[in-house]
Length: 367
Ligand SMILES: Cc1ncc(COP(=O)(O)O)c(C=O)c1O
Image (tube, rainbow, N blue to C red; front, side):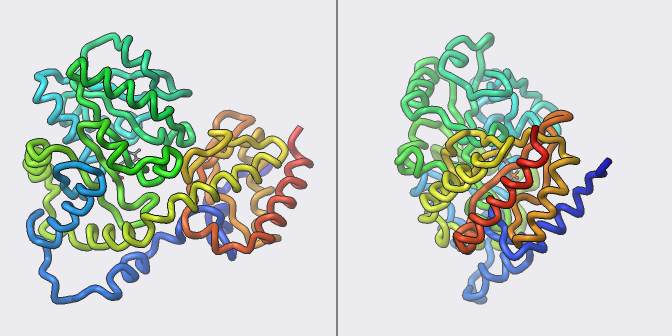
């Protein structure tokens, strides 16, 4: 029986000549590249203030069509604070979000432990929140958080018209609507909307600068001025006012300018790649047709059967598909794909050959 070895798969992936996903390895060069041409005489920001950080915040606020924006070291900090502000304003410590929200499964219950806020989970783990989930909410909440796209189910999206309906309903009921827009740039080509057109449906918005944008770390929280001013107080309370945040927001700014117009390309490439996967025996993608640069690849095989198949395809073709496999159950596993700059660097013929070999090898083991 083959013993899985996650380290071996990861090493083999990074040893390939080309990797299908991402922008490249997260190494120190990412920071060096951003600062290569930077003027060393620029004054650093200090404790969240200064021209440099304020210029960046103003630029992103304008991009999102919001009055004001604040830079945070992490989305985790920014979003817990956003929900806290809306709960305090309403005098009700309840919010609603998806059961697979980042806040629910990746933040060690920060919202509950630090803020005493109780989440009401809407929809179920397999699908998006719908208008009727919001209309039939079992309890009153101060805020509803929507994540676009819903990452843990492959990056799915509701129709824009449904978003408009949810937004209108929340406004009628006095429920604040917050956007977890960790991957907002990534969904603009699908909706064929500007960021501002999407964000105007929401009272507060968070965006990330290290996912599709590919920066080092960091987040922007945006909304009306009164909201962002309160968020600055909470940022100070959380220790988020590092004396200097410029390594983060200057690199965020650099990669934002570099990649802001590339998301339509990533989206088209994701659809092309999903199509290649679907030609392979036992493989499906979620969603079937990607709506952003990301999707999940589900394989009807145990991890221990798939891993040696991938290792041999990596070795024979020099193409890396994934650096990890996650088990769904004893007979199924999956991994996530996010398209970045890497995909366009690969000769088309090499991709085709790699998938032919993958399909052939899967055909031998998939029943
Ligand atoms: C959907 C979503 N929300 C929030 C976050 C939190 O971002 P950060 O890592 O900056 O805390 C992430 C990070 O992966 C995310 O995927």
